[in-house]
Image (cartoon, rainbow, N blue to C red; front, side, top):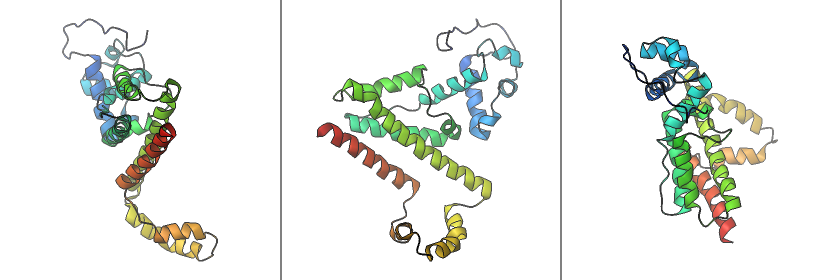
Length: 226
């Protein structure tokens, strides 16, 4: 029986009461502070001031705990809008926002479909908004948006982590590597790249995300209006 259907143990008097929700919230706090490497059943039990064995009545494995954590933050992703394009944009932007609030989520996005109640509820909202899209095209459309978001979010989170690890923000990193690029471009081997680096507007992460999302949504709209 999957954890979504498995009942919790009956409550009993104890110095520290437990529930799946308390366990998951404690795990999320640990992950928000120090990443997924800070999450284990032993560490969560310590944070709750209980013995590790007590957790096994509620959660069978760390994999179940991670599934529950992901579904808990899916409750913060609630697409809205009156048109499928608005809903897909809301899905993309809210997923990105939540991933920035919980960086560890970037490491768990993608893969097999999430079957928790919050993930299913969000999926229902999105698919219901795609009434005008043929049933066979619904999932490819949603997958295209999700894939774009996952790629963008992982790139952005990787940049954040690199900045923390090196102490260099993007501008300092660019300044440090500028002389190398100047020497490389002077060879004449990369004219197209040189033109973009020298002449294109340098967008921040928010602008880059919005423009790329517009490109994707424009393509989807053209496909189904043509």
